Image (cartoon, rainbow, N blue to C red; front, side, top):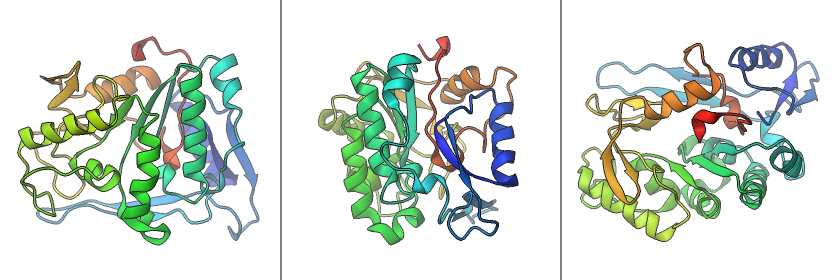
Amino acid sequence: MCTAFADNDIGRLLEDFILQGGVGTEFIKWVPYDGVGRTVRNGLNFTERGFGVRGAVGIPDRGHSAASQLRPGDFDWDHVFGQLGARWLHTGGIFAALSDTTPKLVIEAVQAARKHGVIVSYDLNYRPSLWKSIGGQERAREVNREIARQVDVMIGNEEDFTACLGFKVEGADEHLSRLEVTAFQKMIRQAVGVYPNFKPCEAAAPGCSDSHPEPERPCAAGVCAQTIWTDAEWAPAPLGTAFTLCQAASDPRGERLEGRLFTEGSVLCPMDIPEFQ
């Protein structure tokens, strides 16, 4: 994992969780803590569970975090990809939204990965609150469209593709409360036309946004898993497809990965994972 933590008890707790998941910590950058968090801290995210018709609410508290201060040049990607042989780079829209410097770091990382023939996956994961003070949806689209040109495996639901990349789902209202699967599939085909670099299995089925999950379309690792786009065709996807990949790769004991591997939207570089092949 390539990220940064403030060197305090919370940071060391996060390190412990990462180690429990079997993920290497040698690329974590430790930033001296000033005792109060005036200049650097570890980002937190509070999630209120939904109940009945009220959806879940997330409250990000990520200002001045160590990860948000990362910038191009902080990691030697030629060493990670060229010498150590990392074969898969994963990052996403939460990390890209943390500051003015983090999207530049993402672009640097994905370009280096492409140079070394490394697969790049990206979770759009649109969160309006993270983009609110840095340009809103317009800035989110500007950043994500540039990153998308370097992505092999793009992950997202209907809201993500609309908000982050500007694609429209025919027949959907502004709240995306009703959605025809065929309309979503058409939108994904349009996305693949604009970004031919997207590889098979890069897009999952709709129906899994935070505000209106659908029980008949269960989720796995943040990706809806009813149908997937594979080899220019739509096919049923077994429940847990994405989660199984992450589970096999990062936690062979079968423990859930929530809050462990993608803390602060960090970059994860599995180095020797046959399952990902």
